[in-house]
Length: 541
Image (tube, rainbow, N blue to C red; front, side, top):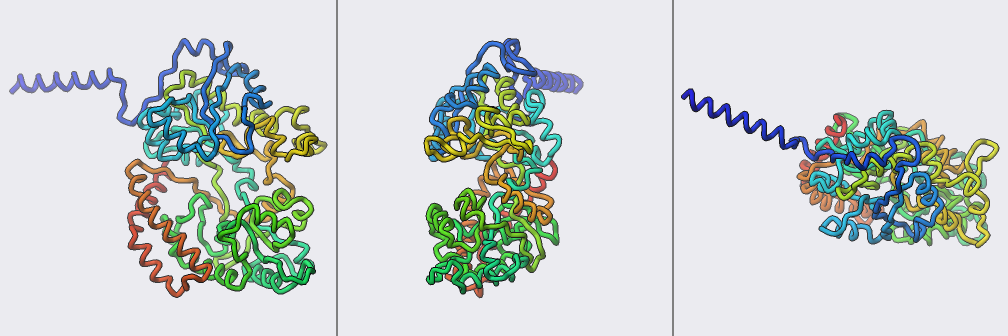
């Protein structure tokens, strides 16, 4: 008996020694070891990042607005000179990103970095756990001081970018939490000149808004004798629904979640498309649509057609980023931002996105032999100077500082001598057009529609009524993803179909109870169980 005990203890000791020597942890992927020889060429601070030039291979998603040769743009020429790092850009058109990603991950040639390739969360977890993508947790802290400071200042961003296994497998794109206008995105707009013609005050409630729309329909405001004015027109009805959600007490954690929010009574995750508030919103929208106050073809209209109609002065109200940039300055100046509209749930505004814009824009792969250099290369774009270079270019060459201390693009960009649009001119110098980029978007260095004076003024009206907590997209385990994908496909499709039918009157709202029962039978309990688990993890990250 004594001999058996000794043998057992010896076996256990050997197993423990082997486990220790293996260097493996049960908590998941390891942080890769950094080649000490490589670090001899690496500078921890200042520029250049490396003493002797190196090349990194990036597979990058390219929008139609961007240059066909990134290395010919001012941004990347300048940054290569600053850093001594050359990027070999493999540019992939937006509509080909998914196929190109999948081919590379299925055994093709991996780049050092997937850049603006919109890597899905499911793939980040799957290939992160397989160590195809590099685990970022410790590496961010060691080599990305600018990003680390932001994650320390805004812990909800780190929480949202962390997967259920406790790891980060990518670098996030951040909207500055203080940049309200960009968090709000597209906003509600109304014709101030038509309000004056109708002798009406700015709408403050949903009933006021209805009365304005009705007055527009019944009055020949453009004086052409045709009654062709469209009370509300846009490219889609979804933004109108989102704009009104606060009035009905739904979508109370922002627009990253189109079907779930927090139940105000229980504090748990709620599937709000079966709530009383959602039904009330559909009733209101059905009233607007059935009375011809919403553009009749709003479900099928082409975006360019809608923009053209807005530019012609046919819309009495809309939801877009900026009437000035889309309808033209002359027509756009007739619009002014709508305040939050009070409804049955009060005066709230829920159409707000998360400061964690997305997490799939910068992914380092196992092929990368220069990880510290790569992360320092990106970290610059989380600094104030870096965002200025990324979005504005170089002072004197692409922008100037005006008398108020604001950055402004030079006249050669805003008024092209070649007759090009501002975007076409900008593509010679920068590559942010089209989005998807890693980094941070700050008000002082971003000159999109959200920073126009009219947009900032519209945001000021909405800000006091914005929600305090905004949920980012949740992350899920592999098992949850597998189960949830099927549930989403069925439940979301049915809800979307019935939503449209209820609004247009194709299905009467008298069938509401029947609709709710069908949703519940489609696996809603399992769906909510997964979402609740994901929410709990997010809170506890």
